[in-house]
Length: 302
Image 1 (tube, rainbow, N blue to C red):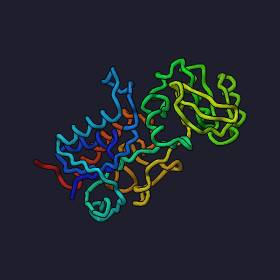
Image 2 (cartoon, helix red, strand yellow):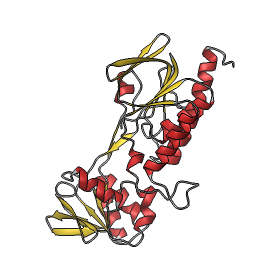
Image 3 (tube, one colour):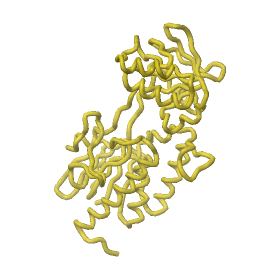
Image 4 (tube, rainbow, N blue to C red):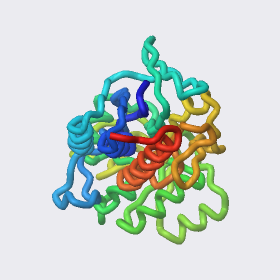
């Protein structure tokens, strides 16, 4: 029986693993290898890295730090979490593990533009032609030609946010005509954001820009931001009985506790800023709460 099983090895899960291992607790970390942080080519707003650091390198360093203190990380996908009288059974690809507590740090998956293949997506992402987080990297598109693929209130919000970095913003509907209420349309007009109806497709890198077709012709941009929402990976916890908000995020208290005793959640799977620093903070809070929870069940002694 482990003291804690962590599901997910992004910034939240790895931070928690470092804390828990240094609490001298026995933990096991399962990583399916799809952390959204791994897609970041280079982040420049993570404190302590003035020259920037890639998401993959940051995750590698954090995993090495956790393993240095005894955390066991396994590349495997968790398939079930079952609450029991004295802890949980966690199913991992046909094999069961037992733990007194479980931390869910499974994150979210961004919805990608329809029709963009995996190789092109990876190349565009690595070169900064495709970006998903204007909070993280809006600075990098200062005074550049930028498209936002989206519509409605979400697309409008992202376009207006990016308007603080450049005046050349085009909001492109992903499928057909824009679905904008009068207020959104008026705000976009006041900000000088161009609107183009969709659909858009046939993506390619041309002249060091990301290009795609629209009903108004082929267009090229220095960077493109998909504002298409995301899928929260809360299914495992929901199936175990954890409370989920209407947008799919796990509901937790100020100490990252779900409504199930012993089940905790941290990072993007919990509604928050979708920022590395925020996820790491929640991972630290969750780990400390887990330690204190275990101490209430049985005093921790060396």
